[in-house]
Structure formats: C-alpha cells, structure tokens
Length: 276
DNA sequence: TCTGGATGTTCAT
DNA sequence: TGAACCTCCAGAG
Figure 1 (cartoon, chains in turn yellow, brown, green):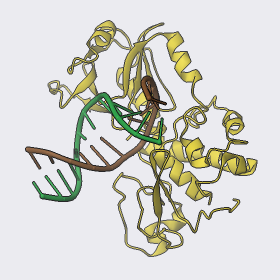
Figure 2 (tube, chains in turn blue, red, yellow):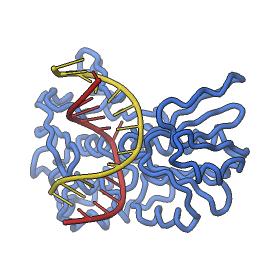
Figure 3 (cartoon, helix red, strand yellow):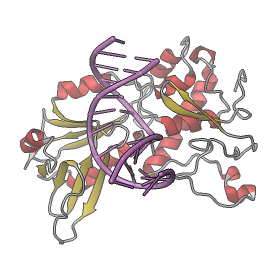
C-alpha cells in the first residue's frame, strides 16, 4: 500500500528498529542473497525516504535501494525475547537484531547501490511534499504550460515525488479541480493550494499510516449518514468509490482508465472547465 | 482451485 | 501504448 507517506514511515521504522547497531541481513527467498551478504553484520547508519524510494545506508558507499512498486511491503515484528519467526511467503530481504525482525516482500526494486547512484535516483525525482528541502516551484515549472492533464502530472514522479493514485484523486477533489484539465490551465494560486494541502495530508498520513482526506464537516457522522469503512483503510472522498454517491453532493462518483491508471472524480464537485 | 486486480515503474515498440 | 515484473488476497466457480 505504498504511497510516499508509507515510505517515510518505513524509513523511520527501520531507523528505530535497527539504526546505529549492526544488523543481520539475509535473503530467505534468495533473490537478494549477494546484497544481503555484503551488508550482513554492518551498522545501519541512515534510513531515508525520497518520494516512493527508500534508502537504507550501511556505510559510506553501501545503500540498499528499495522501491515497493504496486504491492511490495515491509513488515516489522518485535521479538520480545521470543524465537525468530520463520519467514512467511517470499521474503526478499530480512533484517534482524535481538529485538526486531523486518521482512521485505515483493518489491519492484531491492538493490545495493553506491552514494552516487543514490544521488542519481533522487535527481530524477520532483519535489517530495514530505521533505523539508522540497521546492514546489520546481513542480510548478513542469506543470504550467504543459498540455498533459493535471491528473497525469500529479502522478508523474519527475514532476512530484511520493504522490500516488489515492492522494492524486483526493487532492483534486478537495480543490474542485477536474482531473482532465491540462497543466497549463492551472492557475498558480490553485497549485499553491494543492501543494500546501499535499504537505498537510501526507504528513497526517505518515503519522496515521493511512490516507484520510475527508474534512470533519463531511464525515458520515457530520452528514447524518451511516458510518462506512473504505476497503483500503482510510476515509476518502472519491478513490475507489465509483458508482457510490459523492459524500458532498450526492452525485455518482465516476471512474475511468487514465494513462493506464484508475482515475476517480465527482463530475459535479469537479466540473469540466471550472476554475478553482 | 483459479482468476483478476492493486496505492507502481521501466522498457520495448 | 502495451507488456513485463514483483506478490498477495478477495471473490468466483
């Protein structure tokens, strides 16, 4: 379930569990056996996230680069003095010390890279709303003047790093913006509002470990509707709510395939041609 | 038991 | 634009 907020969470969690101490590393599945062997017994000196990329540093020039892709996952377990559990499923990388075990499954990328290679990965990415050093102007320069839809631009990691399909759909809903509008039709004030909202929403997501975007005045309780649970674990307006009523206006939420990804929006709250 | 889908990226055409 | 890849799980049969 990885959008950027999860990756930042994982960086913190790895640091908490393994930082500053030597780590036992293995690849129960075998597909990262060589890399695991090289970092086995070394100290985890840094754990960083940029967009959806996670970097675990084991010394000056040895970084494990992880990208979870669509369905990769990192699970943590506290040992509490008990036995180390057997790996379940296909575990690409296992990290452990006497207190914690972490298993990495199904990543798109799990590779040992140098500091220079890590810098090159980061250089390809647009600003990450979760990073203090992010420059929203860099994203704006790629959005303004672009004929590509704002829906596609928000998902393009070269434009903006860390935003995925859920945050994309939700932030456009929250600002009443039709996903099909071209980047060049977006006004600067709208972009500033989107960026500020992403910073706030994604920070909340890091803390909560899930994506909640529904404003207090639109919760089921506030609207006098029965409570609901969205199946991805958070409270959202439109993501994966196709065919259901918009929480704000009651119009049916729509979906379509857009640049090979599922797009969700409310045609009334996000009308075509409307300007913020 | 099997199939399809999923919060993603990259490479070939 | 389409296919390949990484893995798990809900739902269908």
